[in-house]
Length: 174
Image 1 (tube, rainbow, N blue to C red):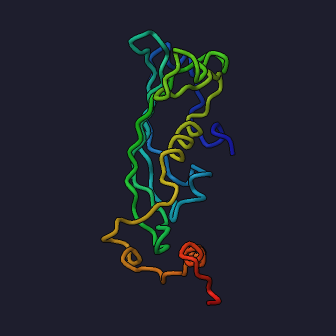
Image 2: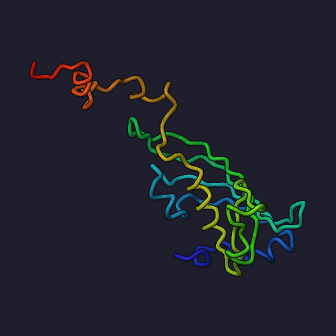
Image 3: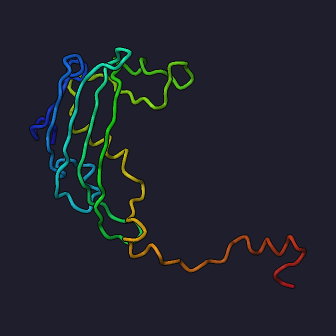
């Protein structure tokens, strides 16, 4: 389903910035298809704010904020837990990929995120991409809340234990 079919805005990113426009909305989690695949529960909403401006050097910037609570699955105990989401990101809008500074140039700054200008940019795609990038790879409860945090796995013999004996001049057959 497209962003337009779900009544979510599609913006012209350069016009949005040039006119210093703002977008605020509360979006149900079930509208985020890719995010929904990794959530324990798609009940709930995210509060979204998107604003356009120019930075100190005159570059066009989109500022995104997203807040809410996601239910993720703990990778230790496989129970769901609430993960507070608070995302804030700035994107410098460039006219083409060629306008993005290369990593070996003097203009390159690894702290800056770039977006290529689009006349039809679905806001939900931008929000979902940024949320997915901020989530932990292996979400877990805090140690005091997780049932499996204190459990220790049985120690397996090291495959290098045999080599330890060779260093001392012994073999396992002796």
